[in-house]
Length: 292
Image (cartoon, rainbow, N blue to C red; front, side, top):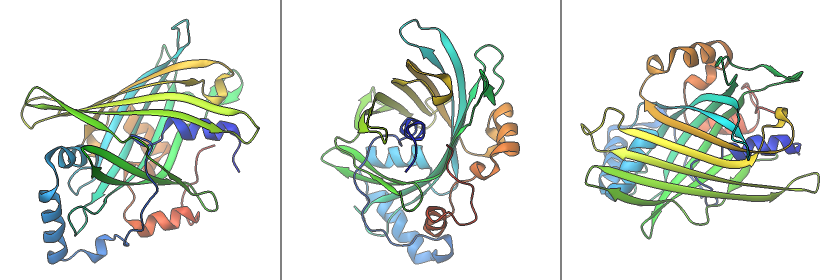
C-alpha cells in the first residue's frame, strides 16, 4: 500500500469528477477497426444527447489525440501567498461504443510539474527535498449520460491496487447564452489514510465549451482545490488554481512545457493506444511507473 503522500498526489488528479465503478468493457484496439465498426460508432455518437456529445468531443476529441494544457499556482492558506506555480497537460483519445447508450471510453495520461513562483523554472528540489512531478501513466474513464447528468467512471492504478472510483452525483451542465455550454464537476474528498488519519479536500472543475467559430479558445477549464500542501512542502493547507485549454497536437503545446516533456516525460506526449496497453500498464509491464 502506498504512503499518505501518494494518496495526496493521487487525489489532485482524480479525473474531472469522482465516478461510478467501471462496467465490464470490450477490448478496444485500433487494430480491430473496420468500416462497419467505424459506421456503428459514428451512429452511436450521432445518437447521443447534444450536451453529452459536446462534452465528449471537447474533453477527448473525435478520434485523433488531443491535449489539455494547464497553468496555475498554489497559494498558502489563509495568507494568499503564492508558493509554487504549476504547469502540465494530459493527452487523450476516445472510443465511442457500437451500441448507442453504452459507455464512451476515454483513455488518458497526465503529468504536472511544480514551478518556482517567481522565475517559472520547473522545480526538482525544494528546501532540500526532492520534488517529483505528478505523473499518471494512464486513467481509463467510462462516460454515461443519465437523468440529465454526465457521469465518468474512473479506473487507475497498478495491480494489486487498481482503483475503481465511484461517482455519486455526476457533472451538471447549463447553457450560458446560445453558444457556451458550462459543465461543472464538484469533488468532495474524504477517505482514510494508511497511517490512521483522514484525507479531506474539495475540488471543483468548470469546463466551458463554445460552439465552433464563436471563441478563439473553444475549450476551456478552470480548476480550484482546497486541501493539503504538496508532500514536499510540509504541513498546512493551500488553495490550488489552474486554467486549462485544449490543443490538438504536440506542436501546439507551450514551448517550455513541450521541451520539458520531450526530455523528462516523452511517454505522456501521446495517450494510451488501447485497452491492451491499459492492461499492460496495470501489470507494470515495460512502462514507466506511477509517481511517488
